[in-house]
Image (tube, rainbow, N blue to C red; front, side, top):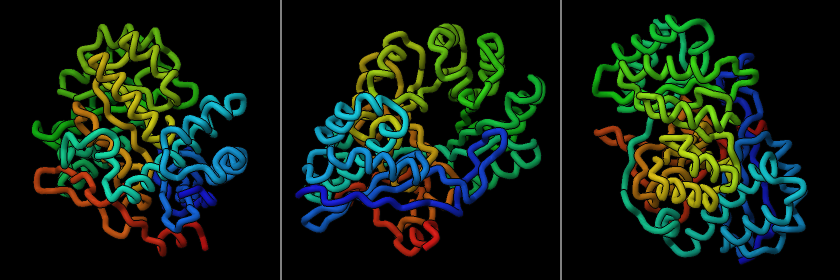
Length: 372
């Protein structure tokens, strides 16, 4: 089975605001699906956390490398793309595109073998996992309503992130966290994402440590991206001093970029994004390296139903995975699959059991979001 072509699916009209200062409109072009077409007929689908124009350019740039390649060897093919695009890639757009291709090839391999991807990644340590609902902070009254509505939908873990947290003053930050804890009670796990990868992030180590001490008083499960994403030394110091677990790594790509962070113990929880870091092949290597350094692994997943499916299979194959990120409400998760994801009575998501990623795309929804 050989790769004949790679098709892209634009996703416009349902984009969720990501929390940046100017926000994101529904028509913002942030996520793209890629579909690998084969000479034998079957197709595989992947997700890329990059705009459709950049994804299309990356696919064409690497066309001589993937055209005619095996569709059943995801790890080898994605590493070939990575090594052969060294001077133009080594992170950034091309690595993001490789991520989507890699996910699609795992989907194809699973379909060809009649097995779920999680089993092919090494074996299924679990059949379900707890998702955490991922949403933005808001003014206290709005935040309270959003959290209560999210719990009513069955979520038992929630992450709140970005503005207005960390953008006004310490007292307001604590008001937001206190409001959240009072709204959901003690039984729901809460996590906080400062969004330190925002452009011109103004806070440093002392703010982060003071904030971490406050979060620990409200039993916040982890403090994510409290510092700019290149501040390795700051993260090492913070992780050693903070009473709250420190999480990060969503902007890093390639296993080599993660290595110093894991070896130095910069995180309690590492969060590679499968749709950016190099796909399932690379994310699995990062996750096992984290395991060897006694660092927890939770995928970053602010993306699509395809990205969520990939994260579910990866979590199934990692012995100490605890959660997956579930962006909600999100049309690109809830509307582009034929069978929506459903939480069980205890707030868990089942790992798909069908071959490949175990999902079927809603083609009508894809055409609608692509503007066709």
